[in-house]
Image: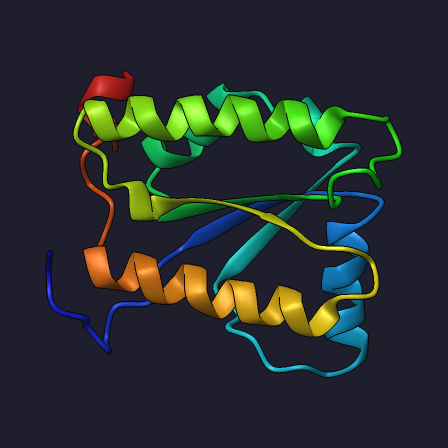
Length: 147
């Protein structure tokens, strides 16, 4: 592992469930809780609707880490979408680790609409873990490859 680099600010994409995690992120913002600004949020109807290819595409386009967050088990608006997401991302994380991508780049969490402080804390942990492994370069497409 690379030593933590205080200068490196990782770029993180967070795929958040509309009903719980996005509302938790909104609560963190409205409550003026401090968390790093280098996270880009993608609001989705349900964490179960996130295609693992979205995560791969984000890593290919130079994102350093990805957070997927949904409702707590038993609270999903779509009954079991969050459980489906957990299974998908356990397999994806294992696959990425197998091909050499650090598992610290991919994170999955449960955050309810009332857990703004928990959301901010999770972001801090995700950014810290990604900062430890350094910039993501293993899956990044170069400009020449993209053409």
